[in-house]
Image (cartoon, rainbow, N blue to C red; front, side):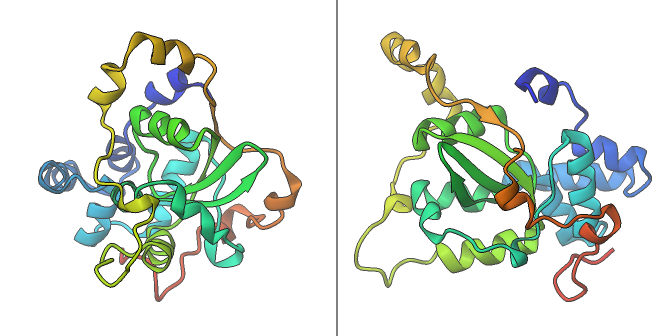
Length: 218
């Protein structure tokens, strides 16, 4: 799926309103909170109790044509969380969970902005394949693998880098660096690798049956 196709798609709030899942007023309230917190919109709507995780996951899968993954059924490569700053992983709700060759597989609760995706590809020097997961599962794994409270850890890791590049950093780079980016890894969405597709739920109805004890309340 090309960046142009993805950026032209409707925002998740618009889809949820059109599908009758939330009201326009609820979206406006959530957007007001987002301006202060910078959290993903879906996470805010979950906290508000107006959607559940299945609503968000199904909407993103359909809108972006991305596959769904149940992380509880997948053996996660725990070393991959070390590739990116922990602040970025928690803020964007993105979990690298496997690698196949030069492709980094990552679960997202919402599709990050283009600049974030480009930053991840640049930092890891890997192409990125996105899968949609539940907020609760991604948050649980991030907390386990790279907790935000790291005061007790003696040795710094890659996630503890103090500076996270921003959109302006990417725009203001040296022209020579931009030339080298023409050959940088591309972003891919989904893959045909049977070794990990076997881990995905196979039916439309079953993959969005959120666990009762973990899913957000309707």
